[in-house]
Image 1 (cartoon, rainbow, N blue to C red):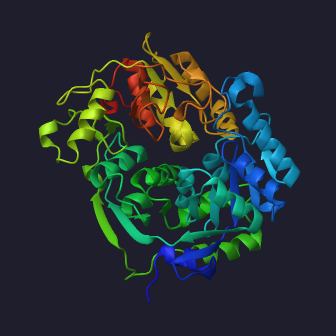
Image 2 (image 1 turned 180 degrees about the vertical axis):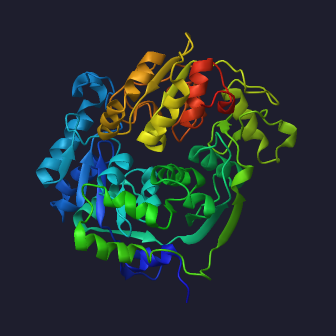
Image 3 (image 1 turned 90 degrees about the vertical axis):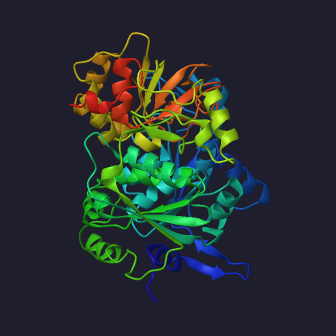
Length: 466
């Protein structure tokens, strides 16, 4: 029987199956960070259990760290205990820990692929919903709660129900000014935040074949916003070239043997999907969110929706979103004044994202009333960007150049948007109060965000694209 990519990854890791449809799945590698790992460590301590395989786990400080250049653990006093608890638990368990002073520190979903800790064919779990990002490499990666994380640390397994397989094929060529973030926002607009409920979403198509791995990571990252824990992209030669350059990847004959297995990780012709969608890449335009979910987006030159056009079940949500965002129905967003621009996060904090933004701002200046931040997704990204002089481009334009961390994406640190302020952000969530109490967030690509910073208002990157 033809198998999907999900089937192949799943079947290779099932330890035991249960009558209720769930399975005990072997987890190859675990990713830990300071907000969800300490409760798991504490649970193990109370039960008198130890970490089964310390070498199969990696701990990083990311969500609550300050991103100031001269940061320390004391920079965010309220969060210091989380950083200390993570380091203490990791060291006691023999788990590698990349803290504030480590050159490998960064956001878990950025560091794992750049180091080669995440590889095709592996299962990875982390106490964060955006672990689906790593599925862009052809890995089975998913978020878990602290109790499941505790079980995984103790047994190297997780009990989980197998999702259905869903596929979205994106074929054709993207227009100028359209990036992976625009593709993700477009898919969310088309299919909604519940499209992936109970399913693993495989992305395919000729457009994706032309995506660099970093673009694929952006697309897979937004899978969580479509209601799915797992996003998948079959590994190809682009993936293998990327992996071959990673410091933790296999070498020589070992890599060749692994690559032969990785090439087989693709859905067979005739594989069955519970839902199979096709999208024409040429129909996708630069997008920006107007509301309070990533699915509430419009083309950058469109108007906000009118309540009369909403389905009955949508009307209360649309009205609440417009009210929270202080927007009117049928309003053009182009020219709407903004206060903050944030470029970073596990969605768009990679080197290619910073390059795209730097192309827009080179030789320009941030509008005087706009606070603009660039936060690399990892210290490795920061060093690479500085080697190319991107930090100088951003600083000359009036951006604040930062150290690695989640920063303004989650507001669990000292980078926040003030109440009532309007922010164009390259992160993945625009829920009410996500970036700070009363913050109004518009999600967009790094290039669009950069264009908005220069204009001082929501702007169409196609009008300023270099």
